[in-house]
Structures are given as structure tokens and as C-alpha cells.
Length: 172
Image (cartoon, rainbow, N blue to C red; front, side):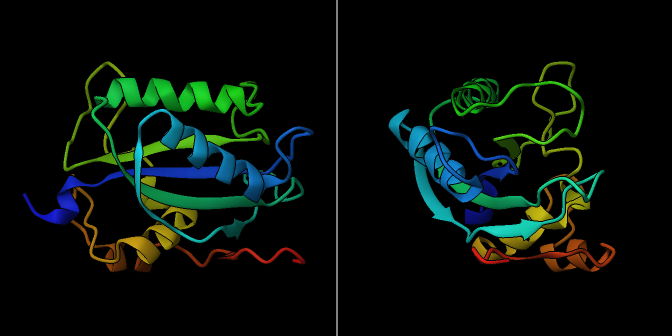
């Protein structure tokens, strides 16, 4: 197995602040700290990126990032931990695609392709459609290939329509 296939990748997103945890970039940092406190080892972390909210661009913009980690947890246990951290940082699951304090998605777990009836589906079923995941991923793992399609990150990015996703600046 190559080094790129051994990666566990998690996407982070936030577009609501929280009175205890702060603004969206601070919430992403808190999520990473909580993962580390649970024994998940951080290998690499992207910068924070800004993207427009979808489907309603009038909602606050998202702060996004991607981390590469190591853990002894299996994919299901890791996903359960991600949901626990989301809830601890104020995520309330409601309407689909509604604004949220935190969204943690398991993007890839090594080179595992899992489409079975149990969660999680791996790789994440919409990763190839999300510039706000692929651009931060390119920052920390430019040679990553989609485990199911085999497509390279540059190929995946080139297939996307233009998107307003750029490095986060506090004043923007």
C-alpha cells in the first residue's frame, strides 16, 4: 500500500458561530483539538478556506478545511466520534443543508471502498463534487487519488465548475 492510500481524511466545515466556542475558524480548531484529545493523531491540516453557503448563498459563508489523521478506530467508530464532536460543539441536526456550527465528514479511510448498507459510505459519496473539500485536500495531499474512480486530485478539480472557494481572511 502506498503512503497516499493509508490516509484517513476528514473534512471540516462551519458557518455559524457559537457563544462558547467562537467563530467558525475557532470551532474548526476546537474540533481538531477534541479529536486529538480522543486519541486521533493529526498528521496534516489544511489552511481554513471560505466558501459560499449552499443551497442558499444568503446564509453565512462556510469555513472549510481538511485534516489527515491516524486512528485505531474503525470507520464506523470514527464516524460516531465525529458525530459526538459535532454535537458537543453545538451542531443541531435539522433541515438538510441548513447552516450549522460544525460539519465533520469522513472523506476517505485508507483506500477502502464501502457502499454497504451500514454507514459510512466510503469514500464520501460527494467528495468529487466539492471544491471546498478538494481545494484544501490539494493543499495537504496533492497526490491523492479517489479510491473508487482512481481519478487524481487535479482531474477532479478540473471537472468542477468555477466555485468561490478561497483561503479564509478574517476581514472578508
